[in-house]
Amino acid sequence: MATQSGASTRKTLKVIVRLPPYLKRLRNPSPETSSEPVIIENLMLEAFGISDPGCVRTNNEDYYLLFRDRGLYLVADGMGGAQAGEHASKLAAETVAEHIWKNNRSEPNILAQAFEEANRRVMAAASTDATLEGMGTTLVAALECGPNLLIASVGDSRAYVQMNGKLLVITEDQTWVHEVGRRLGLDEDSLKSHPMRHVLTMAIGVSAELRIHSYSLQPNPGMQVLLCSDGLHGVVDETLIGDTLRREASLEDKCQSLIQAAKDAGGPDNVTAVLLRCVE
Image 1 (cartoon, rainbow, N blue to C red):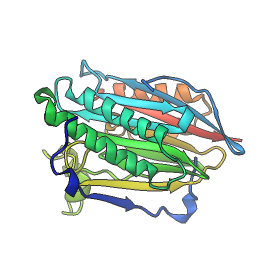
Image 2 (image 1 turned 90 degrees about the vertical axis):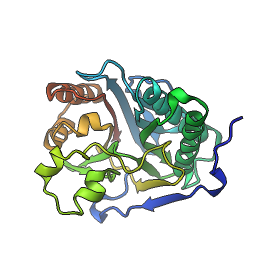
Image 3 (image 1 turned 120 degrees about the vertical axis):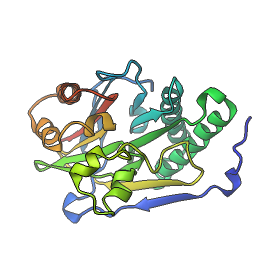
């Protein structure tokens, strides 16, 4: 088995973000589209996922999982050119699923540990195959863990919560725009056209030092959680996303509407949406 050089000195930085108190903490394998419910104590968790290559690209480097047996829901957005991006997103997603399957889900750091393992495997794969060199992927996941829904992210795929008619972004983009451009005081119009606007500051498989943003939520009836790639949130206005989630419609209809909205906006990238809903 190939070993990753520098693995013994690898540093992992976990960032625990404290959410505003009014949010309360929401709780909670090849790609599939399904809305079969899962029982979580006195709540039922419905889930649906869909992915589309968009209007410009011929291949789809996004990948998602609805791993019901372990309460795991995940979106990955690969990068690397040729088939490398597809390989990175699939490998990372399946590594997280395998780690969750084999280990104790009551461990509060289980999702972060799964991300670390995914990072190691993607880096190892790239180091042993020249055609995969430089590949990486974003990763955002939600995992049922005891009374909570754990959420972790690396890169710029996002998690949103829709609650009491309001849409809130939970995750924090690891991008040049968010971590550098805004701190420099650049206005939003300048950031939208800046040559560095698509640059990630962190991704799975590109650095031995991994910064994982971790969050914990408690579920409430009617609460919805959206996991998506930047092919959605990067082109569809958040007002439209919120309006779509507030509609009285099935999860499938809502996901289809979000995908279509991204395509109506030009669909410049692959677009993926995984939508969860808690019902009594």
